[in-house]
Image 1 (cartoon, rainbow, N blue to C red):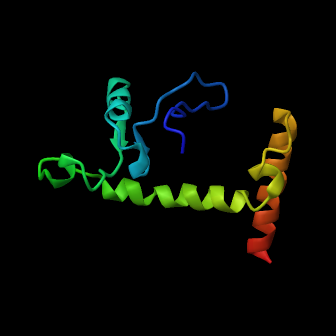
Image 2: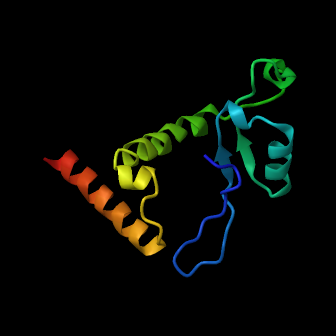
Length: 113
């Protein structure tokens, strides 16, 4: 997950920021946490084993939100089974979106039958 990709666009909506961002331990860096805090986003990032905050009882970690991260990871994992999507074979955004739709249809059909 790219930590800078925190803005979501809805249909006809202005850009908006999420309330929380869940990342793995690799993103447990002070400047990332500061950037998220400055933008009003709660960082749901587990601390590394060698960080002092991990052993601080006053530091809370939202494990319930972090569990939802696996859904996104699994979705990206099965999308990458479609090689054209994993390697970004399609260079035009409209073609890439079409391949993404085909991959989703293929996945749904596999689940249904």
